[in-house]
Amino acid sequence: MQIFIDSGNLDKIKQLNDLGVIDGVTTNPTLVSKENKPFRQLIKEICQIVDGPVSAETVSPDFEGIMKEAVELSRIHKNVIVKIVNTPQGLKAVKECTRKGIRTNVTLTFSAMQALLAAKAGATYVSPFVGRLDDINEDGMQLIRDIKQIYSNYGFSTKILVASVRSIDHVLESAKIGADVATCPAEIIEKMFLHPLTDAGIKRFLDD
Ligand code: G3P
Image (cartoon, rainbow, N blue to C red):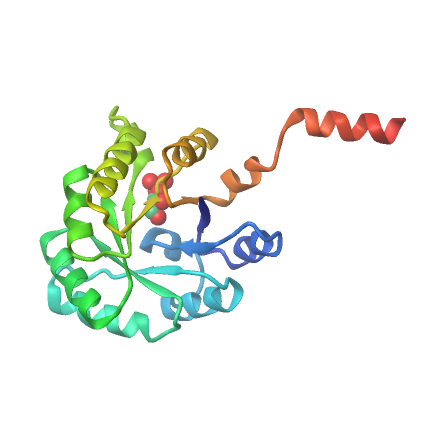
C-alpha cells in the first residue's frame, strides 16, 4: 500500500520524504490555507520535494471553471493530480480530463455509488473520507470494503485512496482491505514508526 502525506507543510513533507516513507502528497484548500504561500507556488515546491503524485484541488463549482483550473494545475508539473469534488459537474469534468490525459483524484466521496460513478468517469484515484463518516456515526472503513469489492467485480483501474485518516487503525484496516493508498496527516505517519517494546529493547541493548 502506498502512503501519501496529507499536508501542505513543506517542512513536514521534506522531513518525512527524507525518511523514504512518502509515495505522494495530497492537499486540499483547508490545508493550503494554513501555509503562507500562493497555492500554485506551494504545489510547485511540493513537486520539487516529492517524486510522486501530488494532488491539487479545484474549487470551481461548474464544468467550465473546473476544466480551466484542471488544465492550469496540470501544467504546473507532470506529477500533479487534479483533485475534483464528487458532484455531477465534477464527474463531467473528470471524464473530460480523462479524455485529455489529465489524471484526477475524485474527492469528498462518501458513498459506494459516488465511487462507482467516479470510476466510470475514468478517475485515476477516488478519495473516500473515512474519518468524516465515523464523525457522523457511520462506518468509514465499511465504505472502503464496499468500494474494493465493486472495483474488483468490474476490474476498474481507479485507485482507492483512503482519506480523512484519523488513526493508525484506519491505516491498518486500509492495508488489510487492500486499498491502494492511505493519505495520512504527518502525526499518523510518525506514529506508524513507534512501538514501546522497540524503545525498551534499544534501552536494554544499550545498557548491556
Ligand atoms: O485531504 C482530505 C482529507 O484527508 C481531509 O481529512 O481530517 O479534514 O476530514 P479531515
